[in-house]
Image 1 (spheres, helix red, strand yellow):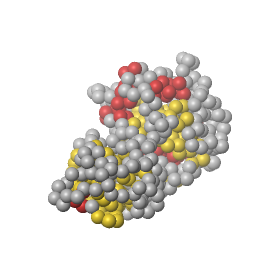
Image 2 (image 1 turned 90 degrees about the vertical axis):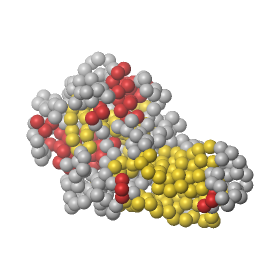
Image 3 (image 1 turned 45 degrees about the vertical axis):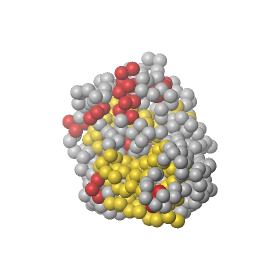
Image 4 (image 1 turned 120 degrees about the horizontal axis):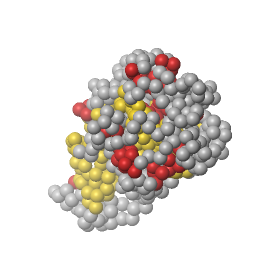
Length: 480
């Protein structure tokens, strides 16, 4: 509709943060496959500085710390490393895409220690049993805010393994609500004070989710053997998403496994430590082999989630051990039909308003169109594997109330940014002068950014009077 200004009845969900690091639709392979090796290994730090071995717990990948390779430099089975998380660690090590370390002292960020968080892509907190200090909480939160991955594994309330008055439920909630960086429900969920004795939480139906359908397999169920769940609060962080739910629950309650984002980083939550327990810890511990539970797919869940947190999802990997460049599409929610998910956007940009028309489906992204001075953005990040060709495609419709044939009053820029938010390049710039009926497909080569995780960002800027609408639908980032 043309005019000097128009009503925009948009969906009002807001996605927090500039760079939502999601890369959808990774190829599915079995956990026994040998994926192609990443050019730079993804660096994972497992925490063992907060009583993760207290009582019967044994939440370590190896007794050799900080480097599990000192126990066995080329492990082929879970027993080559000693620890209840050895299956997790060995599977990552065998892929050739990961470098693992264990932290046994206070967590820091920006320091000189070899286990400083600045040296890693992902931090795993496998059922911590002592509170994090104020400095540690600041370090963890800033690490995630600046692009790190955080994997939080809880246990049931009352699982105080070292009898200090704190359990993992309280410790993780304290991290999220009592820190100096952001204590206003930064991840969009809280851990429930529950002790659920048993169950097999089921995965939601979402074939594009890289945690449920990743390089290490398809996730169908997990396991509760005395655990808890989380309550989701999308009003606080609209990126939060429940992936597996306790039987009888859905939506914002009973989420057994959830993901979220914070700043430029990613977060995963698991409500029980039993699924990551492979039953092969140190002598004297009473352990349970949840990793190989035949009623669940815990190994695929743990490994896919680690891949996603590390920014590795969508990097390919196939059962032939060949190239990363197998044809695949790596953006999530390409046609916006899932509403305000996987994209980071100004409030109302992702919409099903009848004032504009989607090219396909009901939803689309609508930037501008306000008839007042302002800026709106839409962005999503994706990993482009080294040595691959990458092509971004989208359909764009532009309509305007401007009458000039010579002055670009309102503009849309299509840009590529790095993980720090620095503009690496401008792919195109459109304006009111490009207005035309219907959608037109636009394509751009991103092959020059191979080997990087980049953010694709659309920015509309309007002048103070007449509206111009930039309407986007049916996006794709194809890797070949």
